[in-house]
Every structure is written in C-alpha cells, then in structure tokens.
Length: 253
Image (cartoon, rainbow, N blue to C red; front, side):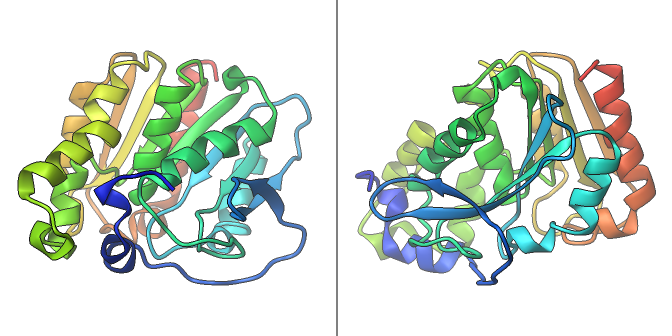
C-alpha cells in the first residue's frame, strides 16, 4: 500500500461505493498483496484493437457485460472491462492511490501493445483512464465520459481534511502529486473524445470543458442536451454510440 493520505480508510469508506456480483469466467489480474481484480474480456476480434473501460463509482463490471460490450463488439473492437479492488469479484479494499497502480497492472495483463488499446473512463473511471494514458502515452485513443477534471473538488464533498488529520494544503498537495489530470494529459498527444451532458448535477459540465482545454492532441468535445450524470448513455444511446464510432473512424483507430 502506498504511503499517501489519499489512501486513508475514511476516504476509502466515504468516497467509494463498491458492490459485489459474480459472473462466469472472469479475467483475473494479479496486483500483489493478495489483490486480484475480476475483470471481463470479450475478444471477438483477434488482432483488433481493444477498448479498455473503467466504470464509474457505484458501478461494477457486470453492469457493462451485456449491452455495452455487445455494442463495442458490433463496432469491431474487443472489449475489456476493468474492475477495481473491492468491487464485483475483486478482492481487496478500494484505495485511491493504490488503484492507480492497479491500472498499470491491468494494461500489462491485457498483453497488447499500447497502440492497440483505447482507454475509456466514465466518471471516477476518468481518473484511472487518464493515468493509463499518462503511463502508456502511445495508446490509440482516450475517451472520457462525465469525466472529472478536479478530483479535489469531488473529494472535499465527502471528506474534510481535519477528519483524516490533514490540512487542506496537504490534501491538495497529495492530489497534485498523484492525480493531477492536467499534468498527466500534457504527456498524452493522441486523440481524445470527451462526452458529457449539460445537465450533469454531480460532475458539472465545466469539468468537460477543462479536460478539453488540457488536451494536447486532436480532441472532440460532445455535450448532450439531455440526460444527467447517471443517464447520459441511456437517454442519448443513439447519439452517444454515433459520436463514439465517429471519433474512432475519424482518427483511424
């Protein structure tokens, strides 16, 4: 476990909302210290590119195994659904910084060149997809849905610094050290798609505009006029998948 205030048990308890569920034939990723991630890998296109999906908080891999994975498959891509420690079938306990390490283990376990991978992060998952793009800047693409530009803003809603024996400055410094999304995106020059809804009441649409400004490569910003944080896909499914497929085709991914 990394020595970081962001791994404090109170943060893990209040910030993360894991659920448990079992499914057949998980793809196990070993992360050390008896942590195993129960991921899902749908490989319908040998030699093709793989979309690596990091879901949102309160969600689990099995939420995406049917409809989402089927659409990705129909587009001609393999679909890897990454799980977090403590979620789904995974062992361990959620911990913000340790989960960054897990991202690297997931990407290596897929055993494909980064150029064959497209990282996709929804909400909380945007933090981990951005980290993956920073650590593996040659990935073919980066997709952020309802993404978080400023993690500190989200964290302070649930935990006050004094509750974990820290100051506001120390917490901010920890975020800058481990989860500075602007810093990390400066190292990724590939294509990026940002999906958000104008009426997101959890992660304001201003986060999408900030992520877009931080892009260093060709970026596409798609703001939907319908839906909210948790219904963006359901309410806009046709336009959502059209934007996704258009982004992949236009960038030759």
